Amino acid sequence: MFTGLIQAIGTIKKNNFGVVVDGCRPFSPLKLGDSISVDGVCLTVSELMNDSFTANISEETLKRTNLAEKAQKNGYVNLEPALRLSDRLGGHIVSGHIDGLGEVVSIENLKNSWNLRVSWDDLNFRRYMCDKASISLNGISLTIAETYFDGCEFSVAVIPHTWSNTCLKFLTSGEKINLEVDLMAKYAEKLLKVNNNDPIFKQSPVISSKWLNEQGWN
Figure 1: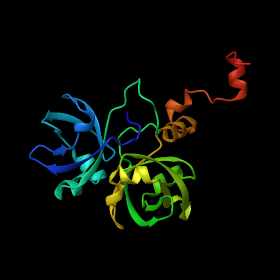
Figure 2: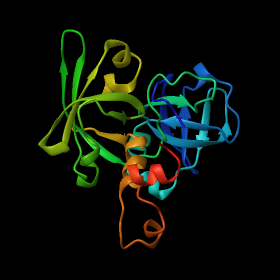
Figure 3: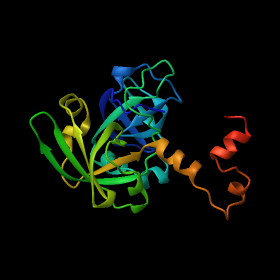
């Protein structure tokens, strides 16, 4: 698990086994098997060097994320080590499991912030898009400022500190970015959805005032 608060900017390149990520010195020491968020993607350290590490990448990860494209050009990536139980949860809970790729529509430099507008063609996820919802964008915990076209586009307001200390400052219009919707929203939806044709749900009680009273919650 991660918080979406970036701790370093690194670079990524391909190797024979996956990728090499450079720039993890600010939060070293790492050890073999550690999880680390690379542009929002949870990767596992398989080899350690001075201030870099190697990670293997599956076909599923390559298909759903921008890492293959970035690795081809030695691109910049946001880095965050895994959350410890003693850490402050300053952002929101981010799993590092990317839901899909969005595309930068526009970047507007305002007086006190940057307005970043993003499109997402996957209609299955537009129901999670609402004003003030949390979203992970290339591993950064951000808040949706406004939605458009029934959730197919959204904007986020980026403060100067976040802009300067993440890879957002390198974004260009049309660039693909990794998106992960709020994990809690997906779990809540799954628990509240009752499908009468599903034998698992048939065995589960519908939580109501009556059911709560019967269980002694009165």
